[in-house]
Amino acid sequence: MTSSQPRASGIDRLSAHHLHALAVAVLIDRYLKVDPTPGRLADLAGKVAGFAEKELFPHFQVEETALFPALRQVLDSDPLIDELIAHHRNMEKLVGRLAGSSAQGRASLLRQFGASLRRHIRMEEVELFRQIGAQLDEAGREELGRKVDEAAGAMGLTVHRLW
Image 1 (cartoon, rainbow, N blue to C red):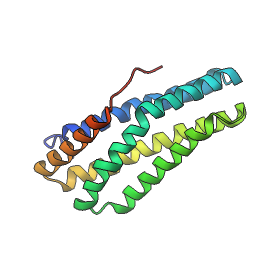
Image 2: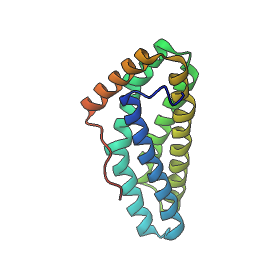
Image 3: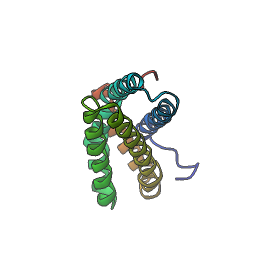
Image 4: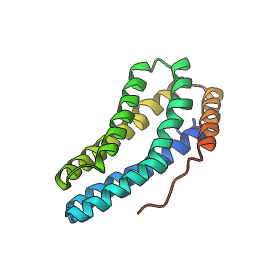
């Protein structure tokens, strides 16, 4: 995508969520380095679970109900989309395992979650969104953005304040 090809608002909304999620990944790393005590790990796990429930999982749902189906119809992106959906399921499993894990297990799960989140966002921003910019004309990008905006609005998707 060049500077003369702006993104549709729906894609910009997803990118804003990606930036927010990257900040969460950085905070996870910092928390793990500064104070990896059992109490702090439990607190961090709770914060990550709250972020996932309020923001990340609804974001996944918008992608899976609006963005990905639309892209499957217009781009040759099925393997990439399948991989991104597999990332979603993996991150959901990691978050689900946090509550019942030991302190050592929580630290490992949190590291895995942060790394997976960063890798996933990089793939969407660099690979998928680049395909959108390169292969869809302005009308196609706007239609895609409209679908994402509608799904995001229906989900009440927003960016919440960081911890």
